[in-house]
Image 1 (cartoon, helix red, strand yellow):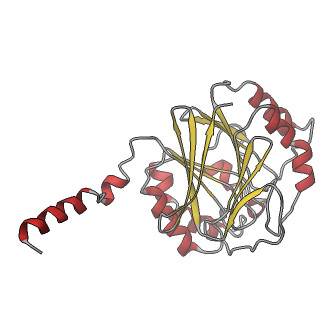
Image 2 (image 1 turned 60 degrees about the vertical axis):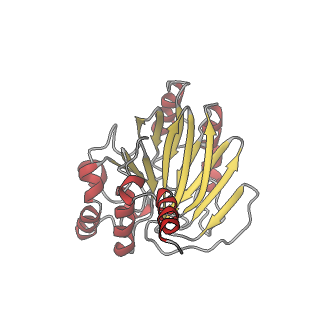
Image 3 (image 1 turned 30 degrees about the vertical axis):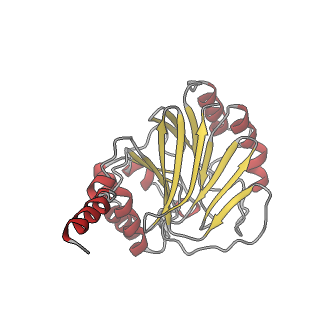
Length: 273
């Protein structure tokens, strides 16, 4: 190859390259959602390092932060691994079944409201974190709070729910499935929730029902659960360590699910209702 042609080809190729630091110099605000970091601190650490490349405004955790929420050593490991998020962003966890007997979350993470169920507004998105292990049946304290919070939310904001248990999932766990659909789904549909994030079945899954995306994001380190059944609501299922990013661009909610190599494994776009 002649020298001049080589230089031209090199410049043309180099012009299509994106430097690593430019890739993550985000101009749009980003919120991250992921969960089930229990059981594998090595993978958990990788996930946190990848997440922090995006410099998120906040990180929502879908529960099962640790394997045993009653052990101080488990929380010490968790907080050491999550320290980049805790120090440089904001961590908003939902209670998982592995945190049932823990008081650490509400106390140490300075969570809003009572630390079990609460709401946060970021990027014109109204996030509601629900505790599936406190009563949420019609008329309960949490149910009344949830309905009131949804009712009073600005109609020009997206509504996104974060909780631990799945409403629609192809995995083996079907804990409280009928109870969730009877008590919570009617509220989600009535008040036009855009997305519901959950965990518990260790996978990534996208399900869709009556205008709402139900996202299982439980790939933070826990051992994978295989698909055990076919459900009509499911659109995509994969076993992969991953996290989800959310952006609100021109009143369109953009979700990307990314694996540990930062490969996009799924995308969703939702307009304001």
